[in-house]
Image (cartoon, rainbow, N blue to C red):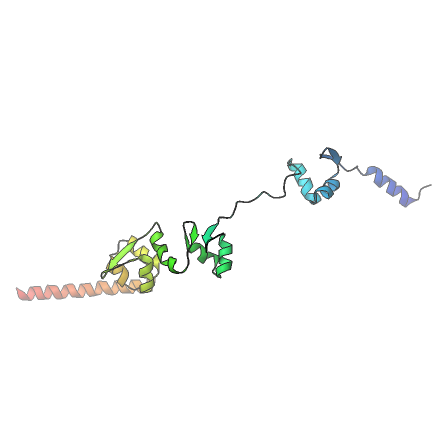
Length: 193
């Protein structure tokens, strides 16, 4: 006779379904056997079977190849160039010109190689927006915005940058000065008559 524990075990074994088998490399194997043969986890195998994906396919699809740039007579990726030079990745990207990364004496040519080149001439000097911004201490974004808004080159380069509240006071004072100047002109014109 079986003890109560043994009977429970027999019921358990009878109720337990046999492991489902799947075709793999010409044999019928369980998920655990396939996982052992491929080196993948059982959960990955189950997901691939449910999705109908080939079990011999590589784990991950190969990603796009990293773009390479000419730097110091070598073909390197941006991360490799940044590691070599100690620059940040952003700085390295900003120094890209075509298929090469520039450094040293070649850097002054980057402004001339850009498609959105804007040359400004003021006081017999011609330079790019970036050159004027470095010379005057005004950001290139500010200079570009001023030019795009229709400011004259003289005004764009000579007027100091201001915060919005400072700009309001500046415009208010300019209106008052114009009114005062206009009243002086009227009085001097009337006095001549």
